[in-house]
Structure formats: structure tokens, C-alpha cells
Image (cartoon, rainbow, N blue to C red; front, side, top):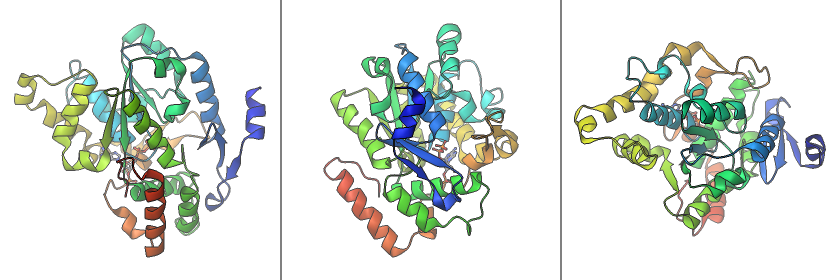
Length: 315
Ligand code: PAP
């Protein structure tokens, strides 16, 4: 089937709370806009994983930008320090190519630079076969579902230049609970990686956003070790771990000029996003400013149903 025919037949949802500004398509069980689904199909057809690839994966709004900055700083620390790193002038999303959008860049990295990091928002079940079959390491970040719902809502509301009053949160919440969110259903996205991590132990590192905030030092060390770039004793003594944490902190990143005034993918009108929208509040528990008691009960019950017996905690 031609790609266009695929999208004529799969479920569509035009987001009412965004005044119809975005239409999502459900393809292979997950929601996304058409261009990213097309990029997924291309990656599935063409991508050939290299053993050294490290996949940085997440459902949107779970801490991707932070994880990318940390992984980039860890992998490139022999070349750059805090005063020379590209992170000072390039937003983290532009430092690591996205498999379902920047395939050519990923392939160029394979050929020319040996840079190992590849980012994705793809669910595990949509990853290219060569990646699933490989022994590449995968790092997966996840976050409390209620803060993800608010972060997702505020991001799309601002990206479509609507006011909060014009974009009712209640409708955004209802869509999310029905699984209709960027790369959603959120719980299915996490469960795909979670199950795969049990089938292939040692292959996927799960990082929880809230744990990373509580204990960045240990989590950054775990991350570095897992992806094959462990800190030496000398580096630890010299404060390299702390320097990376400070460099990638929300306080530092959100105050860099590039992240205050730059634009991500400025040449692509439909998905160009101001960098500042990726750095909103970074507060745990912001959901309390948006949720009614009824919403809290509804999402807690839903998550209990979806995740019962898995050992994952998203509440
Ligand atoms: P994306 O999927 O669109 O890239 P992602 O980076 O996963 O988004 O999530 C954005 C959240 O991470 C925002 O949370 P908030 O809406 O609750 O504020 C953003 O503020 C937060 N964030 C961005 N950078 C950092 C950072 N360096 N440290 C901690 N949190 C961060």
C-alpha cells in the first residue's frame, strides 16, 4: 500500500481543544502527525543499526530534552568542556538526530563521525527491525503521568499560539485518557519498552524523571556507565560529574540565549517550534494547578488498570 493510502484508512483525530490546528493519525497502535509517521516508515525501511548506536528514547514531555543534553555532554566530554560544548549554542534536540525525522543525519554520523547517539520517540513496537535485532543500548526516560499531561497540554497550547482560555484543559485531559496524545497511548509506549527490557535484560536502562531530579549524581553515573562512557576515578575527583549536571540543569539550559530565543527546525513551517517551549517549569507536581479531584481519581484508576502487576509507578 502507498503511504498516502495508509493514512486514508487509519483512524484520525483532529484536536478540538487546539481549534483543529493539529490532526493526529493512529498508525501501528500509536498517535502522531502524518510527517512523523512517514519518517517512521522510512526509518523502518532503510535504517541499519550499528552495534555502537545508543538509542535515547522517550514518549514526549517526559524529560527528553534533559536526557539528550546529559547524554550528549557525557559522550562528547573528551572533546569539549563546559566552556566549549555545542550545548551552549545549540539546543539539545539539534545535537542528537531523531531517527524518524533526521535519518540522513543518522546515516552521515554512521559514515563520518562515529557519533553514537540516536534519538527517538518511537514506541518499541515501531522500531526498525535492525535496531531490535541489534545489541544497541537503549536509554528510556519516563515521568509521572499527571505532569506529562500538563506539560503536553501547555506545549501544544503554546506551540499553536492559543491562550490557555482558548484551549480547554478538560478536553486535553480527556483526549490523553483516551490514549490520544503525541506518541500515545502513553502507558502503551512505556509498557512496550518495559516488556522488552524483561525479554532482553541489560539492554534498556529505565530512568525516571523524578528520580533523576532527586539524585542526579547517581543517575548520571548510571547513564554514563550504561552507554559505555563511565567516569574514571580521576574524573569523579575532578568534579566532571557535577559539572555535567550543572551544565545540563534546567536553570542553566533555560537561561542560555539559544534556548530563550532560538527555533527548532525553523525551516519546516508545520513543525518549527520556539526553543523556549521545551523549557517551561520543570517542576514536579505542577499538575496540582490543573487537575480537579475528579480528574485525579480518573487518571489514577486508569493507570492502575493499565499498569497493574508491571511494577511501574506513574502516579
Ligand atoms: P519533548 O518531548 O517535546 O522534547 P521533553 O523534553 O520530554 O519534551 O519534556 C519537556 C519537559 O522537560 C518540560 O517540563 P514542564 O512542561 O513540566 O516544565 C521542561 O520544562 C522539562 N525540562 C526541559 N529541560 C529540562 C532540564 N534541563 N532539566 C529538567 N527538566 C527539563
